[in-house]
Length: 304
Image 1: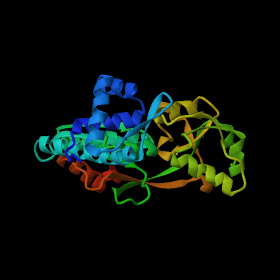
Image 2: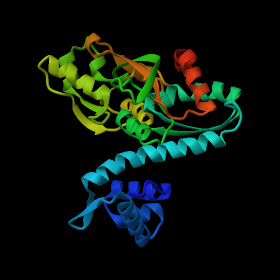
Image 3: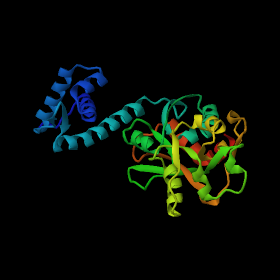
Image 4: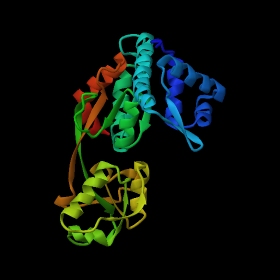
């Protein structure tokens, strides 16, 4: 078996494995389909094993293909990290940081964080991906971001995580909402419809468990969204309820017209962390950002 691999072939193979279709992979990579076919043939000749098998109009990985797919991603990330490390300029005052951020942190933490960080490192560029936890975890695993700002996941040797700040999620309504006319009980919240994040998001799962643990139905979701920017104005203009950071109460973009529905049962204390791939390359700039978050994350979040 030839033990030499062309990194370009591995990148092409990764795209074919992801799409399960030579034509779609060719379009994604802006290459011809014959070029990708030749890539697969070279890899199969080097390995002495078939990597794909036909299924209907598409293809799927064989057992050997599955094994190579896992290795190909790791090799691609390692090659990308090596190239970026060699190309980095200075001691953390230039380069690019790719960061994945939860919507709440994008709104309340990123502006003051960027203000302070860029004052120290004005040559750095920052590329952000704003998404929920499940998407951020996939981006980090795929090497598409250097670090993520998220809620802590289960301990994993593949990811290093440091707590940086705390927050509380609460039920929020418009100032004129009927639920605020008296002392609300948990079951009273079910008389109204909700704006909530998708089912895979931790805050929604936590809230639904609160109701289920007390023998109550789940809240009826009328609008499902992860767009935090839309929520304050949406809640202000409807009789919908939502469950999100207490920081949204009193914001100017809703005319200061939002109020917390105060219930001990629906007050969720949560922690946020900065996480990155264990052993992965972190540029000097990214290391400086991690240090800033660990030292001043709480203060900057409060300032946001």
